[in-house]
Image (cartoon, rainbow, N blue to C red; front, side, top):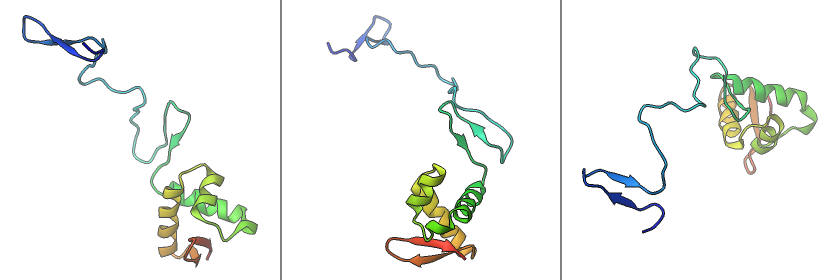
Amino acid sequence: MSATATKSTAGGSSKSKAGGSTRKGSKSAKTKRTSAGAKVSKNDGGSRLSPGALDGLVIGYMKRNRAKLPATSGVVGRGIKRSPGAIANCLERLEKAGKVKLTNKKPREYDLA
């Protein structure tokens, strides 16, 4: 039998040879509930931003690094240690709000408005 095979017992239940136990209803140690809008700390050292906080980080980075503009989402993402996909979505939202402008279509580069 393989290491993960199950063996049926007389009562009809099965036991796993792998030996792992799972409990229904147990909560992960990483989950912390707080009031809406607060930063939530995770065990890996990162923190979850409140809604709209990424916009401020992106605009702040672009203001501090005007010499590096226009910038792609990858450049901004590395600068503030956030994913380029999240930054790309944020930059599109900021463009619609008129806070940044798209200066190049491919690669998508943005500058402050």
